[in-house]
Image 1 (spheres, rainbow, N blue to C red):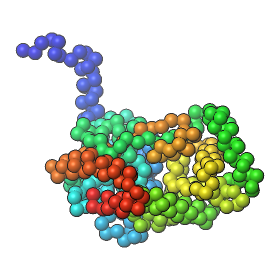
Image 2 (image 1 turned 90 degrees about the vertical axis):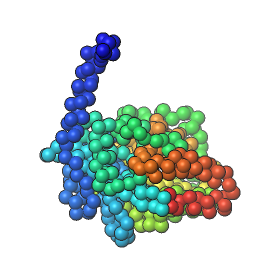
Image 3 (image 1 turned 60 degrees about the horizontal axis):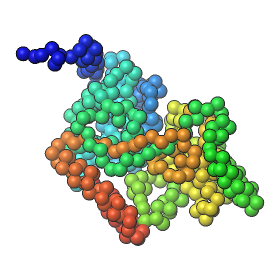
Image 4 (image 1 turned 180 degrees about the vertical axis):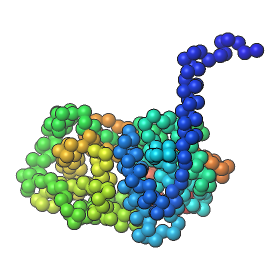
Length: 404
């Protein structure tokens, strides 16, 4: 016989009934899977509507980003591109979207965010009033049924995202915890009020650095006003960043893909993914440049480079101040400086959001590879490689990017 103490209290029973009702509502939603460009085009307008009304929606799960990925994969003739965009609707409107793609390697088959090689965050779009955990579970079940896989991989999940809050119980945390610096401009009346929050000594040091540069020539900030100017900034930052990685014996998921340059240069003229491209110039020559996307009143810093011959004057730090000023002048709510945490970003950031990598095993093979490679060998391999001389490090990083 069940004791009275084992029965849920009145407030607990209300909670259980509410959870049951929400679960039933999610079960009643219609699930669909978009696998083709034609199907995407048919629902893109609804997707855009959802992302604009959904709290916390980020660029990389938006319809503009998805369209850019579809365009890019078609342009390079990627026959292996396997989109798996899962949606939920209530009969009249779209209420949830999880944009994924299936990736096959020698070791396993994985579902990952659409455009995973170039995306900076993994997340899900969920309309207001729905429980993220129930919605995400339904979306994942639908995705795995439509596109069988060994595991689902979510890299760079923000701690404040719906995906983090609704992650299934069987998730694994892989990789190393990171941080994404953010500038919350909406918390200040204007740029001047925000700037006063920077340490006075830091402001003085930056002012002195700028004065030293100006004694040798004019220092100006330029914002690209045309597609041609934007393209020039994109090409220079990509070249500068690639050379810097090579010099350090490092690489990245994006730069390992030889088509990354083509993907980025195609952004210069896109209307659905507005780009803000900026240059800090000394004697009319760029010494620090950056470009990124504007989405839902936020700036997402995507690629930056600087002239390391001027490192003593911290051109990257000086330029970031100009970037944030430009965002404030445009009335943007914030600037997402994204992973990784770096000292020059922390100078300007008002907060740092925790970012983690998550994975969900689906098959025994998936579980095995996740535990052996993602959770154990890969972090150890990365730490070991980073301690190597840069020539050997470059070779090992290339090998690490193949096959898994």
